Amino acid sequence: MAKKLNRLTARQVDTLKVGNHPDGGNLYLRVKDTGARSWVFRYKLSGKVTELGIGSRNERTLAQARDLASKMHTALANGKNPAALVRVEHDSTAKTFRSCALELIEIKSSGWRNAKHTQQWHNTLEQYAYPIIGDKLPADISLADVKAILLPIWPIKTETASRLRQRIEAVLDYAAVNDNEQNRGNPARWKGVLDTVLPAARKITKRIHHAAAPYTDVPKIMSALRDKDSLSAYCLRFTILTAARSGEARGALWNEIDMNEKVWIIPANRMKAEREHRVPLCKEAMDILTKMQQWRLDNNEYVFPGTRGGLLSDVAVNKTLHTVAPEITVHGFRSSFRQWGAETTEYLSAVLELALAHVNKDKIEEAYQRSDLFDLQRELMDVWSNYCTNRRTRVRWYDFKQGRNRNRLLLSRKKL
Image (cartoon, rainbow, N blue to C red; front, side):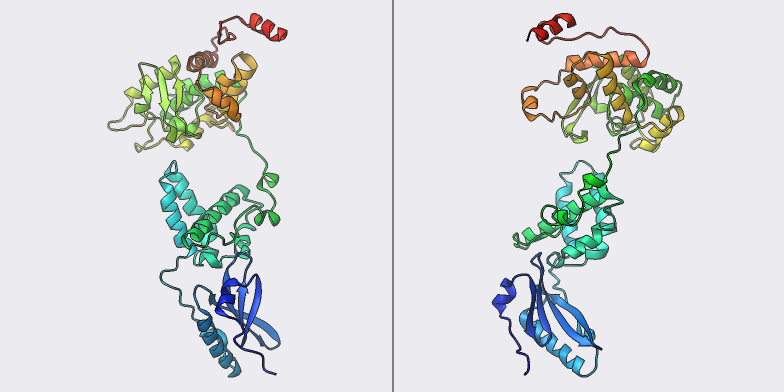
């Protein structure tokens, strides 16, 4: 008995659940767990079952899919290859994953801190995602597609793969919202989808700390740097004296420096925590700035400009550092500063953390501690500068209310 044709209705095409649903005449509707719906032509050739995708539900209506399947069935009966008849003509208005990604990047980039972040989005998607799903419609992208992208790099480039996953998820969410299909499943979502097939990134990635010099070596390193009369050496000394991040110091602008008040105000858009940070400047830091004023290039806003007038490269600064302290990182001096402060001074932890521009993870404490304790920070950075030049300074315990000495404060704590 001949198999029944035209089993599906237009309503079923839009409502049937996950699975392969036959329409007859070798035509099937495939519904994926992501909600994507596509047409498949299945046939046997030399005893082997072959499947040909003939377009998504968005590309072909039920009637169009039936018409193409009928022609393919006839071609098969005549001993011809039905695949030759597959000519999926994409709707010119339909947006591919690539085009959706480019739109999303353009929209979001204005809110990102720098052009480097935008370029990272372009680079990772171009290298890993576009070759597999770039020309696909977002609705047709499956879990298998996402796994094909992530599985090869997840164990060896975990951080990159994790960020790539987040970016693919964001693009697919953007496409679903713009297509008014917010209920469509996202195959790049972590919770409930990829966490069932991939190990958590934190379990396979060991946390690697920046190589730091013991704080006892810092005076010796600073002494060696003072013997160098290069811009990168001055920048490195300034970075160490201010306990700043390399990018913050290399990107310092003259309009951020108040020479009279001896303060460097880094705007929020240049800070990791996106909060303005005031940095007190010690005498040696001020001497460095005075030197940089003498070297200042015309119409150049950078305190430490590169050879071509732009930003001084981190490579140049690291190269200078490695001539006096191999295998040590610039960022590691922040750790040296923090350890020095904890082990050799009696300044409160809050002062040390504020000097490093760290965000207080205790949200309640942060809500009440609204001051940046700037006077204490200035005192701390002067002591740090003296330490870096091997000058001994008496470090005192500071009581905020009455200025009591350390012993009296400790005694009062014992009574509590």
